[in-house]
Image (cartoon, rainbow, N blue to C red; front, top):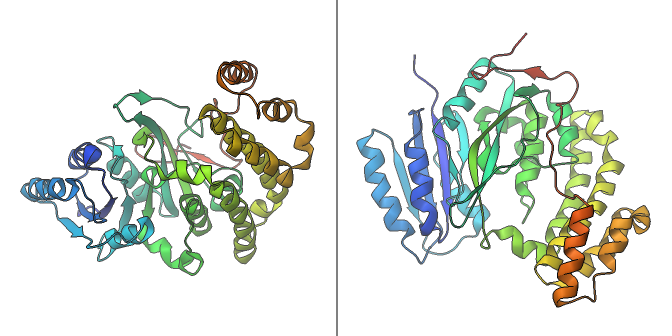
Length: 354
């Protein structure tokens, strides 16, 4: 029987240095019924030439590879939309051109979809890869391969975004259920979309790191963090989530509203520490001033007070203070969580384990 078609969308801007690694990972997929839509956003490097090279390579394999060359930079969101234009796939996957996927990524996701018709999106774990190709492993979000009902997963998304687009494949038909709520965010659009897919159906999670996420100084999030945009949009997200849950009649996400706002206050501490590490004490101080707006009790938190005391430190003194803080405190997630109550375990083929 014919396997469903998967549209792989690859928006790109000046990532020629990583592009072969990205395209090769798609070329090496064990699942072959795919079409690839590549959209170059007026790059000034050799990205377009590399795409044309792979267009020929995919054609020899019998895979349609569409190449768009924008005459001017349309912005990242519009370029992603261009990549998906005229897509014919039953499933959609967006892969950043500096990221990559493991050979079985598409096959594993499709097996979950085919065995579970109520699943609107499949999320996989990821590993991080730096500019030099070094891989860093992190714990998966959930500690077991599973399917979580949409309302429970939406409640989780009130607290955490969990996945970038490269970790997520979606069922195209579910877009009809959430289309009216689609909107653009400068920083937090991925998180917002993950929440919407939970509104549309169940969410599957695979603990294997089937996606490689590139971490480097060129990531858009770094500039947004300097301007505090991520924090401000995070607050907008929480309020949008509350209103959308009300429209779908889902109480679990709404019940976590206050908890979500308070967590945003603690997230400011993480941003502040990162800014200190980058010797941007001025930005770190702004985050520390913002934290009590979201969570007033944080003023009494020892971690908050220690970070605040660093604002005028420089050089060796600042380095020592940062080292001492990190030795005592842990701000990054180091564990995997149990899925919400009522989850269903799945095997490596995406079948529910009774």
